[in-house]
Length: 450
Image 1: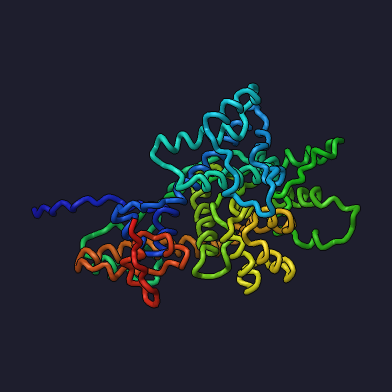
Image 2: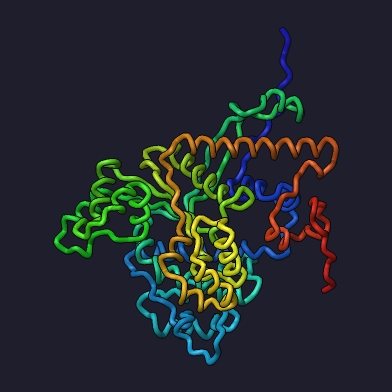
């Protein structure tokens, strides 16, 4: 009797949707150095900003669902009401984030319920205890200001619809069905890797729509109880566009939309919401436009692997920076509108206005219509097409294989050239490795002395 040699057990590879797959798609070389090489960025600005935004929104969700009303607006944050004796007002001119003094004042004025200012303080303090700090006071100011505008403009419509926040998801995928043969791939890298990998992610927000609840609201004598919010409006415009083309004031659009939803989804449905700490990206392969859609579709696939879940019919991306773009963001919005690289184009008059007041966020808030700003801030993705979801998840299958292939080839020859460097100018400008990057066509800058 011949005894077989015991095979070496191998741990199943696990990949995060954002931390691994999207990072790799943005720039493989930066992913290799930061994620695999554990070379922590010296200026992780997005780390603090993203954690702060998610922390505040999660805290607001829990406060609302224990019976406390949504915190009132922050008076010191209101830029348009601030009396400043100058023509140009920018975020840098506002200095209100003094933790100790203002939290004491907050305790005096908000004894019965928490206010936004105190929540911001608590979240920032938690991040600081984990050694996560803002890069500058300007970043802190802009983050609180954007949260305040988000709550003032759509918060009361958004938060009541939230059913769960920060939902972790995991799923297992096979390498089969790829454009190249797995057996050949396995022989190339050597060893006997498993034909499975784990994919994981965290959904920021799940919003569940109970059709019966909405129908009861319609039947109520109090017409104010009818759900008239920006999220439901987006659903109606994308699912039933013909209704919004009818010019008849006697038709209650929201009521008609809900009746149609009750017909199509009698058991209710779910919507995935994801916050992005950036402005709406341009429509191009190099930007994050398609990467964000792939991410949401992958979340849908993972969510529907769980038992007894409502169907996920849509995803909504909320671009936080659109509520108050920075100076650079305003210039970019004007440029993208001028070159028609965005799906939402401003008029020529508005473009010239942005160019004229590019360094004045107040002018942007005053002169650009709120509807346009909300349209830029909220991106709706229809998830009913199963074939597109399949394409998205297979895109990540190929990405995982690319990562493993690059890692294996590097181990064999010790050369990093297998990792491409294809970051955009914005990414490269903040990358710690820009001084030693070999990107074709780029000029390597000289490091500045401290």
